[in-house]
Each structure stands twice: as structure tokens, then as C-alpha cells.
Length: 404
Image 1 (cartoon, rainbow, N blue to C red):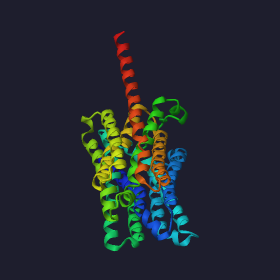
Image 2: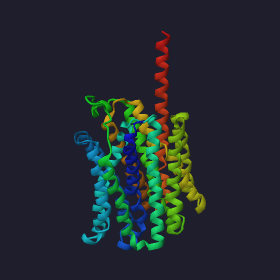
Image 3: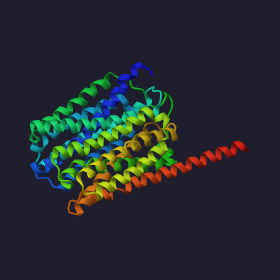
Image 4: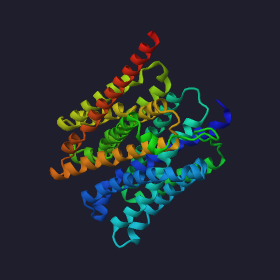
């Protein structure tokens, strides 16, 4: 690997930590927002929906401008949006006519940055001259998990020592990371995914491929399977398992993130010795089991263990699908990565939203809400079976042609 691209790879790693801040800091404050501002659980659910909804919209529209303005400029813009949203999170609730509107606007702004990083980091990493693309992709996405751990651990320590009422200071502290990474990206060499003069597939060409639609379904299920538990883990621990906020944050979302990161890091290191298809199928089965544990076991320790198992099981789903797409569809380009990110964000929005809506319908019972989301890992397993059959058929057809 060219040493000059180490700074680019490190910037991508930090970018996923920024993405983790975008998706996981505010969920730690859901009950705080409910108590401090009197915001209903339905509106808190809407904050999750708008975060991933805006990211989804950015995924879609970014196809038209990222290639024109370039990866580097887009990456710098993304980090500026995240930093601005985090800072405005501390200001707008008091300035707007009602606190929810202020939170809503701030979330929208940092979600724009989150959507851009979601689209950009994978193709930037894929374009770097690394030795093993699948391992590098898994290692890249593991940094989202370590960022998640860092957000939960440092925020929880801060809230315990300084007090949850000072959450705004923590929000400003987190804004420093995207500001610093924007500066790093300004200095980093960034290659385009395709060679000069080469054009990637168009949307129409991608839409004509059956495998692309299966990959889109897999990305949606990956996002939904992960976030349906991750976004509600802290609230679930406090409300459903009746443990303190500190224990809930540490034993819920942090254990989830550690085990998710472990899964990705293991594949990132030993992926060349593993069968990705088999790894993903077993992970989908394990994910179904974790949802059943969370939903039906009343023991708090086992319930929190179920959250951790869920993190372990979903770890490979997102980077694994990206890797399968890069291998299955050559010259997919920025368009393919943007549309896959779009599908992933549909899942990231739909999974926790479904869990929240179902739980609201059953008197805020999050166990029932999470049980409803079990459909996503089931669909992931079915999609993997379909792709596996297609691969076997292609292999059989090639063997038949060789024998003729």
C-alpha cells in the first residue's frame, strides 16, 4: 500500500467515529429530553426518523453532485454539517418557539453530514490502494462501533461526574472531532473510485440487475437489524429492565457496540480465511435468536446479554453487503455505493421507527416493539439464500460450458 494514503485511511476511520456520534449521542438523551422539555415518546421517535430520513434523502440526491464537486470537498462539507448540528443542538431548543422544533432543526443539520459521510467513506476507502478490499472494508466499519463505544463510555462518565443537566457541554466537546477531521481531509490525498475516463454504471443499468435489488434488500435489513436494538438499547434498559441510566448506557448500547466492533474487527483481520456467505448466514440466525432473548426473557442480565449478542450478530451485515456488492457489480461506482447507503438508511430509520411505533401501541412495551423488528434479520437470511443459489447456478453453468 502507498504510504501517502495512510492519512486518507485514518481520516476514513475517524469519519466513522463521526458517524457514530451522529447516530448514538442523542439517543442517550431521549429520557432527558422527555423530562427536561416534556417531549412525548412519539416525538422522540420522530427524532430518530428525521435523522435517518434526512440521511436517506442525502444518499439519494448526493448521486447528482458528489462526482461533480469531488470526494474531498464533499467529505469536508459533511464534517462541517455534523459539527454545526451538534453545536446548534445546544442553542436552538431555547431559541425556537418550542424545544422540540429546535432539536428537530439541529438533528436535520447534522443528519446532512451523516448522510454524506455514509455515502463517501466506503468508496473513498475502496479507492485507496489496499491489499485486501473485503478486510479493509470490515475494518473501516469496525471504527463505527469503536466510535459508538467511545460516545457511550465518555458521555456516561461525563454525565455521572458532571451531571446529565450539563449534556450541552458534552455535545460541544463531540463537535471538536468532526472539525478536526475536516482539516485532516483537506490535507489527505483522495482518489476517485473509477479511473480517469472510466464511467460507472447508471441508475438504469443498476436497476436492471436482479442482484442489485437483493443487495438493496440486504442493506435495508442490515440497517434495520442493527438500529432497531441500538437506538432503543439505553431506553430499553431503563424502562424495560428497570436499571439505572448509568448501568443501562454501559451495559446496553456499549456492550452492543463492543461486540459489533469485535465481529467486524475479527473479519477485518482474518476475513481472507473465512467464507463471507456462511459468516453472514450464521450471523442472521444469531440475530433472530438475540431478538427472541430480548423480547421474551424478563431477567435483566439475560436481557442485556441479548443486546450484546445482537451487536455481535449484526456486525458483518453492513460491511459484508458492501463487499458483496463491490465483487458482484463491477464498475458500480459512486451511484451504487450511494444507493446502497440509501437502502441502509431506509433500514436504519425503519427498524427503530417500527419498534417505537409498535411499542407505543402496546403501552410503551419496547419488548413487543423489538419483537416486531425480527422480520429484518429473517429477510436478511432469505436474501443470502437467494444470492447463494444464484452463485451456485452461475458456477454450474460455467462448468457445463467448460465440459462441452
